[in-house]
Length: 306
Image (cartoon, rainbow, N blue to C red):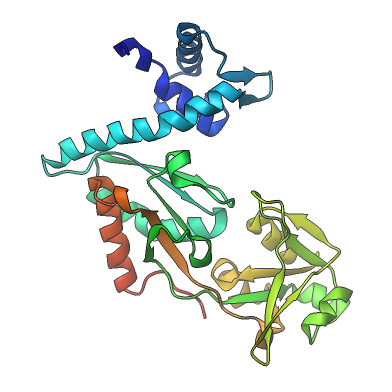
């Protein structure tokens, strides 16, 4: 394979990851025209259409999806090799790509990002917020942050927070208008703000405990949303009951803008974890982030607002 075969690979992978030439250009620090030209030259060189373009969207062709899946690991290994080379000079470098859920991920990364950038000025943090399940290796991420029950068993995991407390929440106005449910079964008479998982499309079933036994309630009515931040906003507006982690709604609970109901029935869940494949943990850039995460967890980690 000639050296020219690699021209345009990074541009192509950036577009494949982000489904956007504009976003890919921003990631790479070049113009949109440069990215488009690089991808077109790559397609012309190999005689294959890799991306299907319309005026509103970009999507991988079957050939493009196959190539992207094969190239991500190879490019990652090249980046790791150069990161190791730089580490010989005593400094982590390169780009550290992290995936995490939108609301909880933002809360988790906030206390870590500034300190990490100060410690490792030669590392660029590339953070993607995504509530869906993400295959780190296939998507080209170095590590992720997720709830413990969402982390695959073949991953190495570092705890970032204590177990999370959850609550069924509503605004005072909603409770004054519709009443306060006193059992989980009573929720069927209320408007609920339900969460849809982006990857599977399934609706979140609200979990409760009674007399040591797990109980799930399929709530109805209200609104279905695939973003917990919007669910919290709808709850504040009095549109219904929301099932949210206290970590996300702490300020609203403390200020009385949202009130807990059914508190004796709502169980805690596993906390947030930093996770990564075992083979990647020795990358200097990731090693530095892992060390910082462990320091943070040892100092108390992310509060659970319990």
